[in-house]
Image 1 (tube, protein in one colour):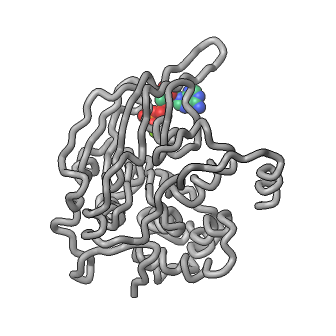
Image 2 (image 1 turned 90 degrees about the horizontal axis):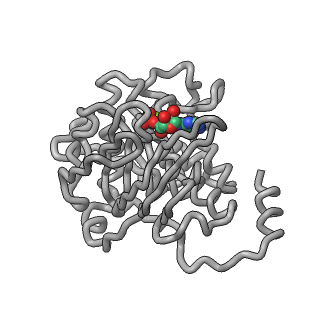
Image 3 (image 1 turned 90 degrees about the vertical axis):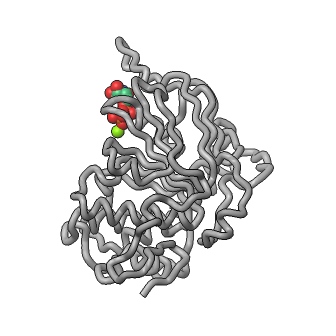
Length: 293
Ligand code: ADP
Ligand code: MG
């Protein structure tokens, strides 16, 4: 899996990167998070995305600009077809814009080579999708270990995967396969998989779209706790209740931002943290680097 990557890397002259791609924070407490200097982790300048289907050209994003600071918790809303997933795919470097510039942590994505992009996606960004995207007939533990395997990590995989699963309340389901778990539990495994590499940025595309209200609340609490640790969280949703649990709401329509409302300051605790208690009456706390009973 890693040989082709290395082979490609060796066949190219690589320009030294001036700085790290996305700053990685160890699971930091609120005080450290608050004292960290703010700068945009996401900086989108006049980005367009046109899907060329031959006869038809679909303008999915039109001259869109968006800055998101480190530590923010942002909801992206909009009706179906408004360009939310297209935007998320660009933010996550899963797709490239047809126009404009995208800088992630100050680095222009168009100047990164395939290795940089793969590294960025594997280690610095955690993805969560509506449909969980777990590997079927494979245990929760092995599903969560996968990103560590892709990242080339050999030792510690099991221990880190166990800790990530424990941090989302899934320590008791390590050996269950996706089909043996409820939707909410599957999404918690998917969140564990997203955070096991300790990413600074979490991108979630309708993560609660397939969940009932109870499971939705569980997943939102986990996102809130991840944000409280200093991670930037961007989540796409069409549910107003979900958007209410964020600090800022960006609304898209026909590939353009039509509304951008800040509800809480970046350094404020996320809404869910104000009243949040876990099932055991303690403050919810998650993080790949944190061991949980
Ligand atoms: P949303 O996530 O808000 O529902 P999308 O970003 O998926 O919207 O889609 C935005 C527009 O781009 C839609 O009109 C959709 O049909 C179109 N689109 C998305 N992906 C593709 C693709 N791969 N090829 C062609 N058209 C696409
Ligand atoms: Mg979508």
